Image 1 (cartoon, one colour):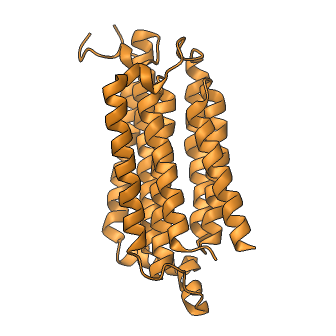
Image 2 (image 1 turned 180 degrees about the vertical axis):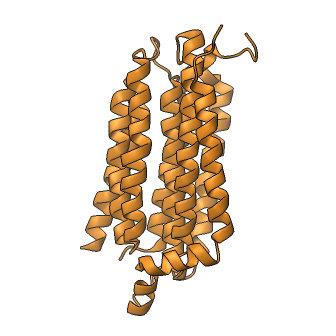
Length: 173
Length: 100
C-alpha cells in the first residue's frame, strides 16, 4: 500500500515538474507546480512528517505560489519565446557531446553512491516514528538547539520584505 | 518496500528537472519556478534522510529552506517586476547590460 502510494505521488511529482518546465504559458506552469507540491506533501506524509506536509501546503502552495500567480497576472506576461528552444540550438554538437558525457558520469556517480549505502530501509520502530513525527518534538528542537538560526530567519524575512518593497517601487523620475 | 534509495533517486530526478528548466527556459518567471522545483527536491532529500536517521533535524532544515524560498521568491519577483518595467520583456537574454 505504502509502495503504491509512493510510486503514485512520485509519478505525479515528476510528471507535473516536467510539464512545469515544458509549458509555454507561465500561468499553467504555476498551476502545475502547485500539483507537484501537493504530491510532495503526500510523500512527506509517507515519510512520517505530517508537520512538514502541512507547511508545504500552507507556505508553498498557499503563499509562495499565490505570490507567483499575482506577478504572472500583474505582468500579463507575453506567451513566451517565439522560437522553440531545443538544447541543440543553444549548445552545438561539441557542447552536446560534453553534456552527454557529463550526464552519464553523473548517473554513474549516483548509482555508485547509492550502492554504498548499506541498509537503506527505514526503521519500523514505533517509538522512533513517534519521535520523528511529533510536532511537539520539532518545536522543542527548533526553539532550543536551533533558536539562533530561527531568529536569524526573522531578520532574513525582514530584509527580504524591505528589499522587495524597495525593488518593486515605482521610481519617481 | 520503499527505502531511502527510492527517495534519493526521486529527489535527484526532480533536481535534474529543475536544473534543466533553469538552463532551457527563456522566461524569468519559469526560471524562478524551476528554482523552486530544485529547492523542493532538496527538501524531500532532507526529510527522507532525517527519517532514515530517526531525527527531526531534516524537517527543521526543510522549515528553514521554505523560509529562504519565500524570501527568495519575494525578492526575485520584485526584481522581475522592476526588470519588466524597464524592458517590457521577460526573456533573460534581453538583460545583458549592467546599467541602462
